[in-house]
Length: 121
Image 1 (spheres, rainbow, N blue to C red):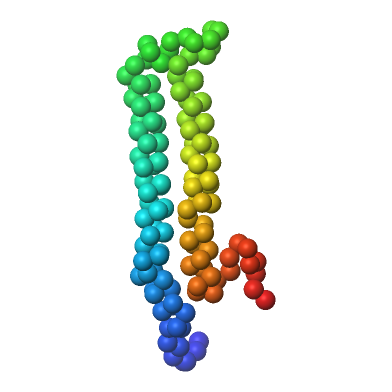
Image 2 (cartoon, rainbow, N blue to C red):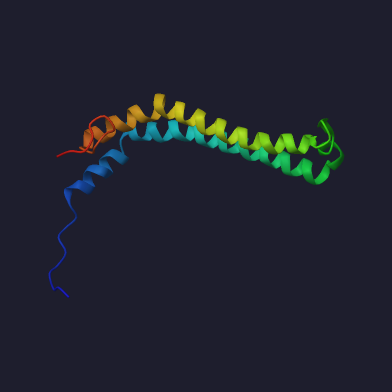
């Protein structure tokens, strides 16, 4: 057990607080929220529709579409997976264009490693 007093907070933390308070960082957060919040709401509404229809519109969900085993419920269920992958793909494209360039610029300003730079040595 050491009796040494801890060193004062490194000036590095001041750098992060300055970035957090910057207009560029606030814009980055707004940009992220501008995609994430509407997509989350849309997905939850889509999922709630699926659950509600499954619970209260059994005849509709049981309607046969193809053959003897493919019905509306199965198609809606599979579309849940499709919509999940679609949202992930859309987010990836959105982040590449709108979020990552700003985040990389902020990282470069504070001396962090960026995707292009690789590790510092």
